[in-house]
Structures are given as structure tokens and as C-alpha cells.
Length: 311
Length: 185
Image (tube, rainbow over all chains, first blue to last red):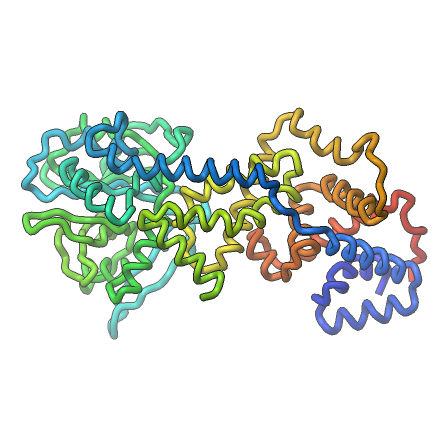
């Protein structure tokens, strides 16, 4: 072994992280090279000095300021749900995102709207799962996270109010937890409708790298009035999903599979949400799958009942 | 109950509207976050950055999914925040580093160990952040290579090479004259 090779390995050597064969080579070299042995000593002294660096206590005054700042921020968040019932000057982002679209919707009809925001890059996001009918049972294959999906959900404003009130009990005020920075708002181009656009079917449309699903009653003007906001919330939702799944309920991919039936489908998006119909509001998976080349959105309860599907 | 499971319990309580549970989480981990900020971003900004990290945590803590230890995740969040902050830093903030390297007239030192510690701290601050982070995690905090790879989201080989380069630079900084030229064997 040459000195250069030895020196490259000394750092790993002192941490005892070299492979056995490399370690033996380094030790043989050290035995016959005083310069490298001296370098080893220097490294050992350095790491000993660094290890002796004391752990630092946060100064008491700084700790007190931190405590005050955290308490103030928590108070601000705690007051948000109560304010959203009417007194709040600006609605939470997830209401703002969709409010313009629902002014004319009849309260009695089932309303399901959500946005799927798709990043072409990024390392976080929901699992993109390919569902396949493998003949002897469905096979689920996880694809690498080449796309990150981030999403938001909402229902009509009246439902929102009810949901906000009920969620206030549990502290699940998504608006407070997920509120994005203003810097995350960006301008979007005109929407491009994907799939059927016959005025009767729910529409899936894309604006830049965002995907939206709209109900048939939503006019083009309303669609265009969507306030484009990039949402940094999908991971939170996934955690809620994971929790739901651990409570002996179905997973998002199982929900998608129920919607797909025997057919091959790709799960484009999944989001925990609530779905309202004549029977009331129920917790459900909101999933979008690609089925026969067309997007299909559905709401599936956590015990597998399909409440709604767009096809 | 382990620390990890009690972290989980606090986060769950916070997710269900229990604000004091988050305050408890802050108190539990503020020393850790402060140490990272102090060592990695520098003493002058440590307090501000610590506060910013916890404000960020307030929004993000429910994103922790438990597939890594909470402290690992918190280290990552903190280091990323320090990195972002240093990128945004203006020249006046850079003076912090200058002051560390050349602290000027000092009070009398009574203990040699203080001199050594200050010198090491100053040298550490001279390293690029990525090198500083890996030295901090390994040599000051004592993390295993695998944990460092997990925290920094880099390959194990990158941990080894960064650590080797960082330590080599530190050795050179602390011994300006440097070792005698090597005889090739």
C-alpha cells in the first residue's frame, strides 16, 4: 500500500470502520511508515480534542425566549379554529383554495373536490403504487418515488364549517398545521382538461404541474378562480393514513384496488379525507386511479365501502 | 416508556390539540438543537436558529412518520435549516466566523484546555458546512457512520470521504507547519 492510499483510509481506520482486509493492509503499512504513523497520531489527537468538546447548555435567557415564542405560536394556532367559524379575517388556505368554486353548489348534493399537486422532482411524497391484477390475486408493486404527490382536500363551505368545528375537538385543524408560506404561491397557466369534458362528467384538469379534479357543476370561470397554492401537506396526510391503517382499516392501495376491481390500474393519488352524502359525513380515502387510460376518482370508507366514484 | 415512544406520545398529543405537549417536546430537545446550531452555524446565530427550527417543527412535526428515530429526523431538520440559513447569510453574518478565527485580545486564560477547545472550535468553523456537520456528528456527538448517513441523507462512502477530508483539513489548520513530506513506501 502506498502512503496516499493509507492516508485516505486513516480516518476510517481510527473509527474501526474499515473492512478487515483493508485494515490489515493499513496496519502493515503503518508498521513500516513512520510518517503515516505520525499522521495517525495527529488524527487521534484531533478526535480526542473534538470528543472533549463540552455539550453546550442553552443560555437561560435564550431558553426563556424560546419558550415564550413557542407558547405564542401555539396560542396563535389554538385560536385559529374558533376564528374560522366566522370571525377570521382570512380563511385558512385550504378553504381559500376552493371557496370560489362552490358558491352555487346545492348543499344536498355530494361534493367531492380535491387538488392533486404533482411535482416532477423532489424526494418526498406519497407512494406511487401500481396496482395489477396478477391472475392469482392482486399484486401490488411499489414504484420509486420519481414523482412527489402533494395534495389538499375540501368539501363545500358548509361542510367545511362542520368539519372544522368537529376537528377542533381533536385538534386536527389542517389549516393551522399545513399553512404554506406565501412564497409558495405561484401563478399557473390556463387549465388543460384531461379526459372527458362533456359538462356532465367530473373533470380532471392540469395546470402546469398541478392536477385538479372538479365536479361537473363547476364552471370554467370557477375553475380558473382556483387559487393556486403549492401545498406541503401530503406527508402529514400520509401519516394520518398510516394511523388509520394501523387501526385495522384498509390502506390507500387497498381502497384503490377496490375501485379498480379486476382491472389494471395505477394509483395516482390518495388522501385521507371526509366525504359527505345524504347519510352524513364519513372518513374516507379519496383516491384517484388511472383506469383504462382515464382518471377515476373515488371515496372509499376505511372499511372498504365505495361511497362515490366519478365513472 | 422509552424516550422515543414518549416523543411519539407527545407528538400525538400535540396533533390532537395539546399545545403543552409540544412545549414539552421543545424543552426536551432544545439542548440538542441549540448544540447543532451553535456548532454548525456558529455561536452568534445559534439562538435565533434554534428558535426558527422549533417554529418550523411546529408546522412539520406531524410529518414525522416514525421510520427513523425522532432525534435523527430532528437532527436532519435542524441541519437543513442551518444550511439554508447559511446560504442566505449576508456578509455581516459572516463576520461571526471571522471573529471566531481571529478573536482578538482575550481575557487571560487560566486553563490550557480552554485554549485548545477554542482553537478546535475556531478551526471547525472554518470548514465548509457539510464537512463541519459530519465532524460534529461523528467526533462531538459520537454518531455511528450509518446514523450520520441517515441524518445527512448521504451514502456511507460519502460519510467516510467527507470525514476523512474534514479531519485532514482540521489537522492542517491546527498544525500550520504541517507534517514532514512523506516518503513514498
